[in-house]
Image (tube, rainbow, N blue to C red):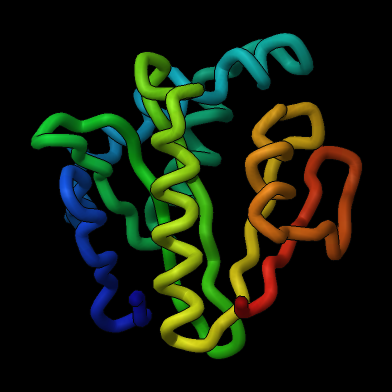
Length: 160
């Protein structure tokens, strides 16, 4: 699936490709806009939207992890970050554009990423904002909470 040296997610047949993004200002901007589309509704009610702060948070994540554009039939529908490290696969920044949420696409992509992690024999870890309804997706796919803080739940899904 993914290694720190050569990040790669195989295509999800018949219609989804994962394109590894180069670290450019253009791809940073594109991934930030997708994040804003997906996450503003969960962030604004709690804290408002501080553009400078959100850009800095996103910059830290963008610089530290490989990002992939999710293409459905050649059209960008979201992004995801996937990175295999020594004892687990880290899944993060999994954002779909609004027109593509709630239609089963996130489920397909998550299942694919979990299958890839199973193939390399690693559990998957992720985190999400406590009030984000995405929790239902993750719990349905075998994740369980392993820790939490005031803002996030941290989950792990064992090897299937």
